[in-house]
Every structure is written in C-alpha cells, then in structure tokens.
Length: 113
Length: 109
Image (cartoon, rainbow over all chains, first blue to last red):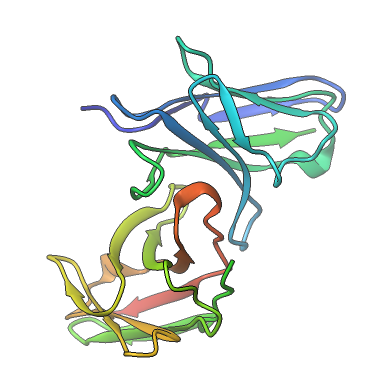
C-alpha cells in the first residue's frame, strides 16, 4: 500500500504564473488535508476535503487559492497568479475516517521567483 | 480548539530518555492528544495518541495526568536519528488539527 504521494516534489514558478500541486491519498482514504509550512515554522492548516466536497477551507486564502478532490484522480491545490509570499512547503495528508490519524506526503516545495 | 504550549527546543545525548511536556489547559472532554514527528524536508509522521493515563507503543510512551491539562511524550534511549521536531496536537477530530511550532529535539553523540 503506497503512502500519500505528492507531486511535483519541487515546483518553480515566476510571479503571476499558476501552480498546481497534486496529492494522491493512500488507498482507501477519502479524507484529504492540505497544510502549508514556512521555514522554521509549524504547519498551517489550509483546507480539508472529502471526496468531491470541501468540508473546511477556513485556513485557505479566499483569493487565488482553490482546492478540489474529484471522484476520480488526485486532490489538486491550485494557486493562481503566484506571489513570492506563496513560496513554502505544501503538505498533503490523508486519513480513512475523520477521527483517524493523518498520513502525510513528502510535500511540494514551491519556489516563486 | 485547545491551544498547546511546548518548549521550543531541547537537547539530549544518545542513550538518554527524553521527556517533552505539552500544556493544553483548555482541552475539551472529547479531545484526544496526538504527537507527530517531523524530519527536515519530510511530512510529519504519527507517533502516538492518547486520551488519558498512559499509552505505550514500540516508539514512545505518552503520559496524561488525570486533569488532562498537560501530557508528556517520553522517548526511551534516544539515538541521533531521533533528532527532529515534535508536535503536540489536541483535537476531537482531524478536521482542523493545529500544528504549533513544535519542539526541536537535538540529539548529540
């Protein structure tokens, strides 16, 4: 059973471009969470999704950021018109149920030039 | 959501026991206490979870007093590979687990 897969591992974008981060949860997991981490800081919750539904997006900026978890395929975190402040590590986690522990991927390091 | 407070950093030597205490004065009745470990450039990894008293697994022990306002993660006989950041989290569900800045543990030879 493969773990949570995130790609790309590293993503470089210029200001104004779009960034798409992908997350394939563990097999059998229908709950997906996205976190952002700046250097030397803890993880900041962004959004929680369950197949085709956004359950909690209170940690995600209302502008330029969006997330989806379609019935088929990976979860996507999309950042439009990236700015330098978006540079961070973005981690995805999945769980089989809401009260189960989280399994994290290795993250995507986004660098905005 | 209960806020947690834990030391910013700790140092230890190989073979010693390390105890990291986390304060969570506003813990709710249905909240669990969970600890994660994070190595550089990796996602956090679940270590242990408990509700009350003591929980032990192959990696660590978790001690929770009766009032549940704090908890202590105990790592027996640490090695260099235990150098990492350790996060204490409190919550009833995983819908919005809050990761603080964690405790940066440095193990020396």
